[in-house]
Image (cartoon, rainbow, N blue to C red):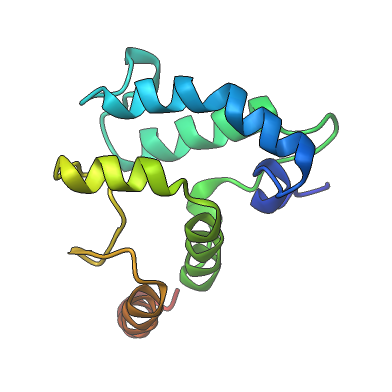
Length: 136
């Protein structure tokens, strides 16, 4: 079984991805202005959210690739994935979320921050707690 890395699903910094980003940008911004997601993106609980995300990633994955289910990630893998997402996050969307006190703004362990070093420090502390209590 091939597992596809999240990085392959994220746009790169090439010229072709820049034009893709421009085309998608207005739709992304319109969606970011909506206070709640569309019905197709709502879930009742964490297992339902994990299933929805896995399904969404599977829908855009290259043919033959398999997505690693969200619930199988370790704390370390989640931290690495979040750092990757931080690197490709759209600053315009983040600014919009911050000015609206939107829950989609960057945060870690209950602290709203877009500072990567602060995030890494909190992830490390969280990983220690998870290991102690859950052996994750």
